Image 1 (cartoon, helix red, strand yellow):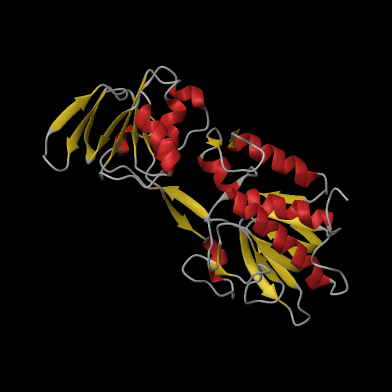
Image 2 (spheres, helix red, strand yellow; image 1 turned 90 degrees about the horizontal axis):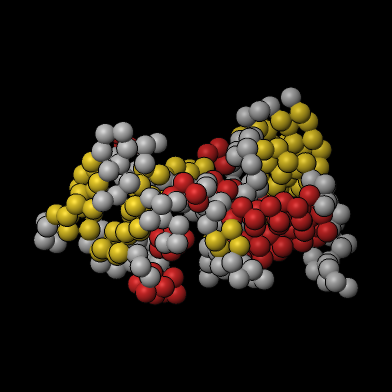
Length: 324
């Protein structure tokens, strides 16, 4: 058992949680950050550490891994305690307004405030039907090393931003890249989609995987046009299925805090309906919400500074400028 007494407990060590730790540090608050993953970074680390991110201010392009490394370096300057590989389980609010959180690794955190930044929670990939036998033998849902696709004939399956971004990422690395999507319209942003259509990637819409061929690995994929039932065999040695994920908040969903679906409604101070409990990142919902890394950074700043004012009403929520 480990016991901790801090000003703030931050649940989640993704970008929002790490930046909340930075700003809590600016305000002189002690903190514990926890995450069910054994590495910081949350969804970025788990899903796309090597994919370039283009919507963070100051970075024309930055890989997920590098962004997390820099966020961790920034937060660590304030000496937070990180409990990685810990699932937040128990939540108790005491009569004096303080809290006790417990984890599945028997850690006990007594804290005066809480910032919930768990993002989507724990997640598992949506499976590509009928291809289970090839998982670990050429079928991937996550990519942790770009070189795994080097000189492969790659098939990307999906129609969202991840599928489009991965196809563009691997165009100069793989021997060939084909992208198929079961609909005729994509859900991706316009800019990357336009670059995809101008690239060497072969794009097939209204097309699905019918059958995968190969003994020791993938040798070919038979695809079907779902409008005409016409079939075609593609020379493919690797499949990347970018079909999205099932999210599960885990024990946080059972905490006595108001949820709308899998999201926490917050006000403009990032407060939940429980005094002393704030939130930031993909877990939050409010009018005009955008699920972007850059937005989560701003929410983390708002949450951390209002935590400071909540814990000590004599201080201002606005701390002044860091370059002052």
